[in-house]
Length: 369
Image (cartoon, rainbow, N blue to C red; front, side, top):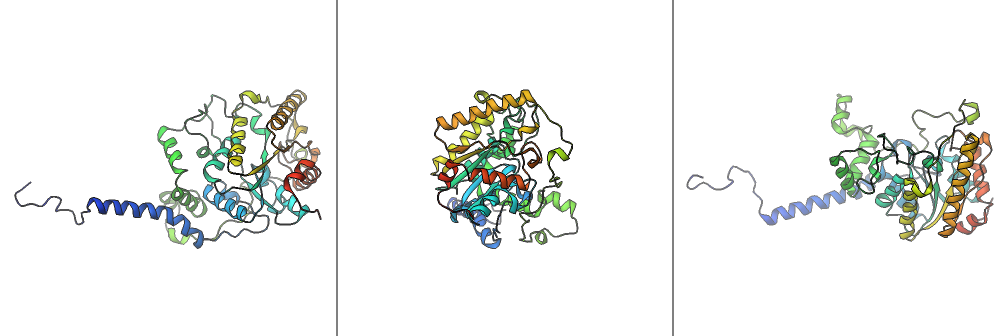
């Protein structure tokens, strides 16, 4: 350094240690403040029979907002996968809607998410379900996720599964999950940062799930600011591609013979127990609905194994004193596939639940129309 030269004199601005601390605190405050402020800018309009729009199925920040709205309204939260969400039906034809129509509108909230297998459900409740406290929760358990080692995530062969960000990134190990170390670390940190959840919401809701660079390349003559319309997709926006809402027998779907995974070794079964334990630890009352699986699609040997699995599930819930219902299979023509009912199937399932003494005791007072 030349004589008389001031250290770092080429920098236009120099911060003292105290100023660096103030800048860091300001940035952190902004990262927490922006997601909170955005909820005022973009109101969540929860219509009757509301559900998270299909396009926002991986928008866990939005899921958290809807859970908070439903909790504050004192609703019974119906939590589960696409069976609860209503893959083949409109928002007013789902199971929560059918229960509402029978008991009086406004009592039940649809917190289903398309493709949310138990391992992802546990992560969703742990990292994005913190607002669900002191609620009555009906949690649907779909045996489909234990129909094979692939669905159970215990296969050694790599494959792409739903909602990988929500599953355990390191322990317990998932053999078929081969994300890089950097990707796993990124997922582990991101799901703890509200600002990341908000940024992911903006990306999914307004930029076609692409990052800003990718979106700009696909829309070279459009302004990114113009894409943020503050208009969210409709809860009745159908899945893409739109499924055929016909009985499975009219779609040419053949019977099949899943091998089923034993409860003692099932990863998804352990994950489901984790999910309901997380809810219970937060002061929620939990009722488990098993199914409704389409047993009519099963070949005989597989059906017998399923009956054993179903009995084992019920026995474990009884031993743990967890209120539950294992309704009999719906009539064959009320299923669209292996586990999704059509609209009449949901109404029939609601009627069966409302004839179940444990279920009535759980939901408390409320008179049927």
